[in-house]
Length: 163
Ligand code: PNS
Image (cartoon, rainbow, N blue to C red; front, side, top):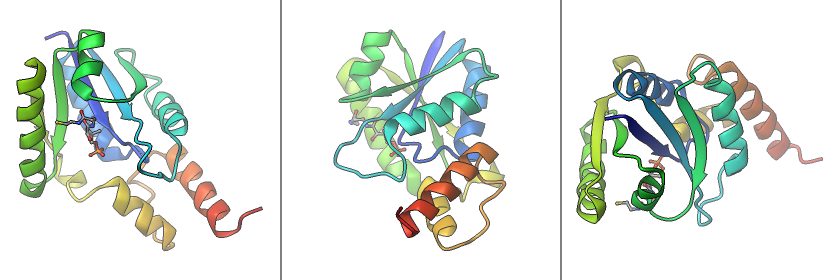
């Protein structure tokens, strides 16, 4: 199949996300990273900031584009002619909800979901955990790209000591 989407919140993108993306690029001719606009959830980074970071860290991947989307993922896929959704699975605890979403998305438009097992070195990794550890002063270098680490450090500092 020529095209796929890697959807998510990416607040911020981690090395686990980038591993799944790189492996999706081996399977599909083109992969769109789609960042969900979720007005109900205040993130550490705005959606535009997340998209910018993703564009910067994928600049050397010519078959990747990064966009944001609102509403249903299946509608985004339909508008773009995207035939498959790629999701990473870190553990069986991910599977329940991911299976439900995959089956719902398939029922809505027939779009298929392809699950890739997380690489063992990233299977504990989640954006929420990275933010929590970084906010507590823990070392998260090596878990996110250096550019993301810089921006996250700066943002957390701003939050602690507003100008
Ligand atoms: O990184 P996340 O927060 O786990 O990503 C979840 C995401 C964005 C993939 C999921 O919430 C989603 O697809 N949202 C779009 C809205 C939608 O299509 N909902 C119905 C799912 S069956």
